[in-house]
Amino acid sequence: MLVEYLADTFSELNIMNQSLQESNIMTLFKLHQLGVTGSVYNLLQSCLSGRSQFVHLGDFCSDHLHTNSGVPQGSVLGPLLFLVYVNDIGTNIKSSISLFADDTILLCSSKNPSALHTMLSNDLRQSEMWSDLWSVTFNASKTKVFTIYK
Image 1 (cartoon, rainbow, N blue to C red):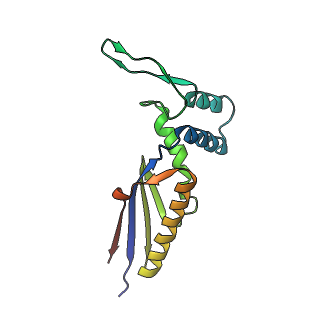
Image 2 (image 1 turned 30 degrees about the vertical axis):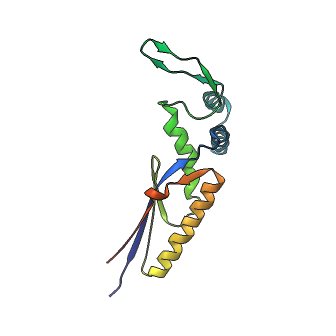
Image 3 (image 1 turned 120 degrees about the vertical axis):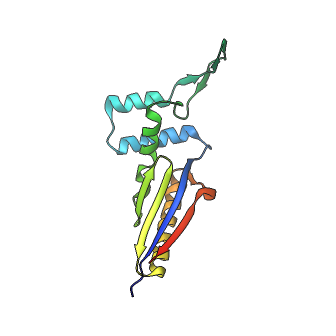
């Protein structure tokens, strides 16, 4: 009887808070690599820099604070720019990869459990290298591996 093994890795991505300004520069770099240029690129660059923020609560309004990092909270562009930022995560991954918002799933199968372990280990190593390069972390407490066989 043939046994097939299936492994699933679930994880959540977090953009590191060490330098959001740097993440904006990297996002603009990725947009340029995707072929975004000209007025669209300039518009997105403008959205990511030279902004100010303040708190308005009832009759109170705080002073404006200049910010040159991050994506404006609640903006329509926020989710799109996040997807642009993480879109290339699967470039060197052999497993099937699925992204939904900040959740990532690697899925691989094999008739050989040793080969499955090797494939998943290699893909996790590739994911770690990508995360180091682009200053993204995987939330270890929300990372799970499931192995199913029949």
